[in-house]
Image (cartoon, rainbow, N blue to C red):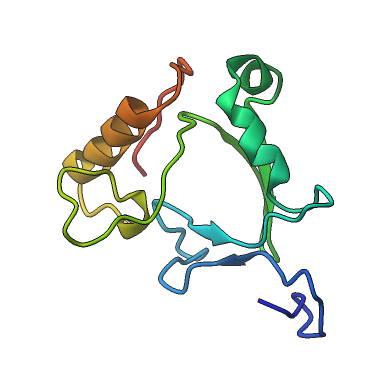
Length: 127
């Protein structure tokens, strides 16, 4: 949380994947963590996705790793939080890492689309 990707000290920290996620083979859902910096770096622009017009102008996200440069289409934009254990019937997207079947993948995508602030008109495919 207070080191950069080269392991040097950085007050801003670094963006990193959840320990259960994998790039090779790639997990079905990549949970990416980092700070929402007041100076606009890292995740601040994600908050703009509550506006459909912003989504229409920025419908893809670029993701660069040591292995690959990728572009992803956004299928859903929603606001969430970490839920308490006693809260039932809520979408805990952060528990989903790898789909073991098409049905499990479809359930995740359907929950994401139901939680979405607006319809993106995009679909996701299971691989």
